[in-house]
Amino acid sequence: MTTSLADEFETHRPQLFGLAYRMLGSAADAEDVVQDAYLRFSRTDRATVEQPRAWLAKVVTNLCLNLLASARARRERYTGTWLPEPVVTSDGTLGPLESAERRDAVSLALLVLLERLTPTERAVYVLREAFAYDHREIAGVLALGEANCRQLYRRAVQRLAVPETRFAAPVEQQEGLVASFLTAAREGDLAGLERLLAADVTWWSDGGGKVRAALRPIRGRDKVLRFFAGVTNRIEAGAEFTTAEVNGSAALVGLHDGQVFVVVSFEAHDGVFTQMRGVLNPDKLAFVGRQLAGA
Image (cartoon, rainbow, N blue to C red; front, top):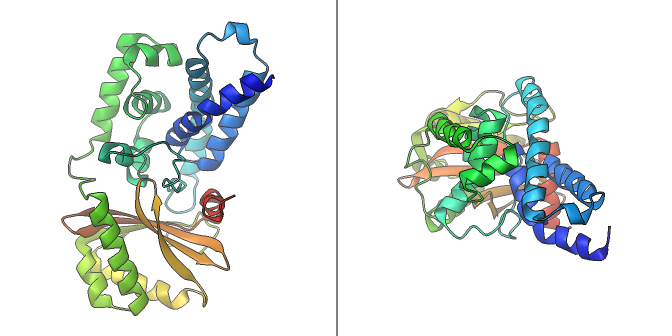
């Protein structure tokens, strides 16, 4: 592959990674897909590729579709709750997130909801919502009829059924709430934590059977507070917590000896947290660990 073609591929790499990540909910798998696309691009006669962006998007989408079938089977056997891999987004890894809609499109909450869709529905939804492809372009990527793509998109929207208020908290409010949560947790201020939690707050944790974590969601303010109290007693000495922009919103990152051991994301509404998701599976923290280390 010539240098010029390699450079051309690099101009598309961020978008290709963003596409694969949204399709798969896995940064590690997204990296593998993008590398596979690079190898295919390097072996292809350049004269046959009239529009590299469209050609690469089609290759990546179809590689993801192949992976999703096996991924769904693995997730059905997954120990405890399956959550997507967190990704630091302040460095532009998932593209510019200058609007609330763009931030919502990469949130862990929405990625969890996307698991409701069939692989093809997910592809149509991601291409339409995240990359503003029109239905004709989507039809070209998926080798489907344009009318069929419209129908798949409508079905995906209906199946997601995302309430308009689900992601209502502005970024500044999220950051303030997370900072307040961290302060209250450091000071052991249970009353302060209680004020930050909705009565029906839910905590989800993903340990993947690799580390100790709640296997089922914990629902209700009192139960979540008791859970936090128990977890606090088990956190190793020397652990540090900081905030970072993860999947488009403020999150907590826990580190021990420089290694990330948990990332907690939040959903907030009316000034309190309604959903909290903690990723503890070390396999899912490798990518965000490299990001924070600047690797």
